[in-house]
Length: 435
Image: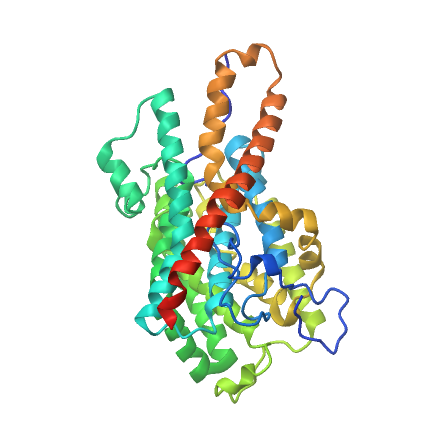
């Protein structure tokens, strides 16, 4: 009996501003009343809460970034393709670019949702932590325990100390190459420091914006990108144009390696928020916005992603996460930030953002966080069933199709009937903390 191709490892791993230009692809940002903070769910993968406070919905606060939800549906499929069609093409091998966009997008969405809040009092900070992390931790722990159950059937359960460090999100700090139960949970561990530091980093970003304006934000984004890429680039140069798979892990899975990319997303959100009414009232005498023409912003967003996909598809491969491949972990950060800015500012614009706002993509994207975390235990369960004898009765494509259907259906049911009531309860329980 042949085993299934499997590679889940830490390294693979309507409100709008009326634009005078009349761009046919704006507005793209809509308020989905079922997804505001008073709703039961936040937005997906990995744990992004696209809704903010309970005030009247505006683009800069509760506006659901529909095109980003649609983007997540495609990003999750890209990552699934890398795991379950391993080494199928250079495109699937470079799913670390999809993860890079997810990390930057998490910073973008977090600051888009919470950028207008003070987060200064203990009550506000505690409420942010509980609401931001509660759903994430619940789903992550469930995915871990499901994976432990599968491991107990396939081989043996993990050592208890390793499991404890994974549940505390410490293992990727200590051993980036040690795979926790449900390997995708490394992204949660990588994002956890950025979420915990957000009340402080938000204040620092505000200071840069007030003192430096748009130019200061752009310089900060450039500096953050340098910090994220420079260590790999220096080692790459010193080693004669080569990075090992182990070095890839430290530049990708090790949580500090993702701090700058999350912050890049925050800066991009600040630049986009400056297109909101009254954005120039924060003391910026050097202009409130980066680009006044929505068509130019949309064109920039589309061109940025065109360059990203050109690099992914046309640059020759140097191996799987070795050679120059680890540079893709962070090299495309400014282009990804340009897409987020151009496709979101002032109601959003661009052909790609318009396409990503399609209802089917946005609908499926609502559950991408759950799909992202549940993929491994579900696939391994199907693998056990397959190797028990179904491989002699059915073609493998039937297993793959069934796996995908079951994965998305179960993820949606869990999100709506387990996670949603839990999030609603959390919001109700913490409502009085800021009064």
